[in-house]
Length: 286
Image (cartoon, rainbow, N blue to C red):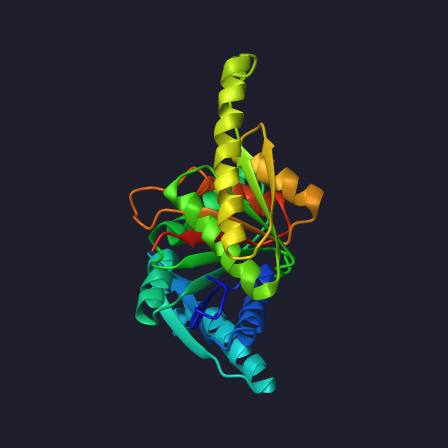
């Protein structure tokens, strides 16, 4: 949640060049809501033999880059007269990030996302998916070169409880920041059925019903909503619409349970983050 109800922001840092400004986004976000900032950096467990490096302090040298990013973040906050808490852990990154989120009672987790090809995302993007799945709170993914703004926000709706939560976040943000809300429903009809008029019509009618309910919900909060239906897989629809309408933030829904992700999450989030320069907020059903 990105409103006055956010009390603690957890930024998960790693040593990649693209991720090194994440704490700056966390501080900027915190300043708009007077929230506490905690930065965590996790040194992955090394399962090999440190001694083979012929270094007396191999373990410390392995941890050093992850500790250095915390020092850099703390010095930056101090230079601005801001406070920040830093936490260093050793272990599996996604597990430690979620553990710290529980410990500090985080309301939102910030993650960086480097643009990669599909195969690379499959090999390297599991930390993002696992954090989304198991986190106790919302997750905000900021792509490489992404800028955090709230002028235009896009909610992906499909009628599920998870997407309803995404809609609530969109309204919440719009009320706080005066955002323009766009709501998109993707029909996602298989190719072999797309030529059947009745199936397409029924899918669109279902979509307009869901969007109409959201528009009414927005009116209850004095927030107007721009709606649209697109025919394609959700991630492509959302990415294309975001580019076309110059969207600044995409909001998706995810179940809190670790049993699985909603249709708008998991690899979909990774793909959207790779296709668009705007951040993606995954709203967890609390």
